[in-house]
Amino acid sequence: MKIYRRVFSTVLCILMCIICMFCAGAEGNTTSYELEALGMTIDFPNTMSVKTQDLAEGIHLEATTQDGQLTISVTMEITPKSEEIYSFTQLTEEDLQDYREKMLTEEEYIEGNITRRGEGKDTIPYLDFYCKSTTQMNVNVYRRQSVTLINGMLITIESQSFGDDINSDELLLIENALQSIHFSNIRSTAPKKTNIGLIITLIVVGLLVLAIAFVTLSYFMGKSSVKRKHEASRERRHKAQKNNYDVLRNADETNRRLDKIGGYKSSKDYFDSNFGADESDAISSAPAEKRPRSTSSAGKHSSAGTAFTHMGYFFKNVKKEVSKNKKKSAKSSHRYAKNTKGRRQSRDYDVFRDR
Image (cartoon, rainbow, N blue to C red; front, side):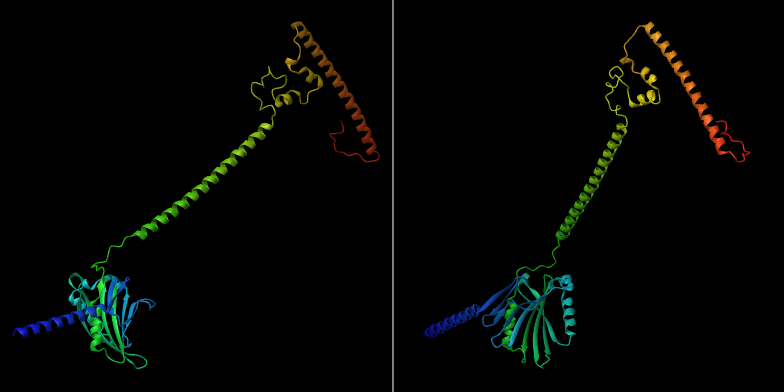
C-alpha cells in the first residue's frame, strides 16, 4: 500500500508540473496591446496578426487568425448620446435591457445578452450581440459584438467570420480577449470642463480691444495736437501781419518814449501831422527836441513872425486862385462862343455857364 501511495503521489506531482508548464506556456504565448486613445489594453495570442496603425477611421486595432477565417477589431466613437450617458456603470439593469431590446429591433441582430466582465470596482457591463448578414456576393458573415460605454466612449469589440459560423475554439479565443481588457482609468461621471479656452479667448479679445482703443486715442490726440499747432501758427502769422503794419509798434515801450526817440512815436503820428501840409507847416511842426531852446522873448517874436508869414502866404494864394479862375472863365466863354456859333441856343438854363 505504501508503494502504491508513493507511485500515486509521484504521478500526481508529475501531472501538476505538466499542467503548470502548460499554463505558463499558454500565458507566455499572448501579447498585451495598449490603445492609448481608449485608455485600455487587450491581449491576443502571438499566433494572430495584430495591427494598430494604418487602419480606417474609428478602428484602433485589428487582429486576424492565421487561417484568415476570424477577424477581431476594436472600434470607438463619441456621440452626443454617449457623452450624455457617459458610462454603462451608471445605468440600471432596466436601462441596459431597454438598450439591448432597442438594438435587437434591427434585422441583422439575432440575440443579445448582458455580461459583466472585470473584478471589483473594475467590473464593466457589456452588451453581447450575435449578428448575421450577407454580402453582395452572397457570402454569409457571422458577427459577435461586445459593446460597452466607458468614459463617454462607445467601444465595440467585433468578431467576424466569413462563410462559416464562429466555432467553439474561436468563441474561446474571443472570450479570453474580452476578459483581458483593462482600462487605466474608469470614471463614473464626466469631469468638469474648465473654461480655459473661453478665458484665453476673452483675454485675447480684451487685449485687441485695448490695442484698438489705444491706437484710436493716439490718432485723435495726434490730430488734435496738429490742429492746435496749426491754429497757434496761424495766430502767430496773423499777429505778425498785424504788427508789421506799424513798423514802430513792435519797438520796446521804453524806446518809444518821446524823450528817447528823436522823431515821431509811430507812423500814425507822422501821417496825421504831415500828410497834405505845406512845406512851411512841416518845417514848423518838427519835433521840439531837435530845435534849439530860446528865450521867451525870442519865442514870442518867432511866433508873431510866423503868423505874418502865414497871412502873407494866404493872401498870395487867394490872389493866385482868383487869377486862375478869371483865365478859366475867359477860356470857357471863348470856347462856348466858338462852338455855338451859327447854332440855335438852347432855352434850357445851363448851370455851368457862369463858371
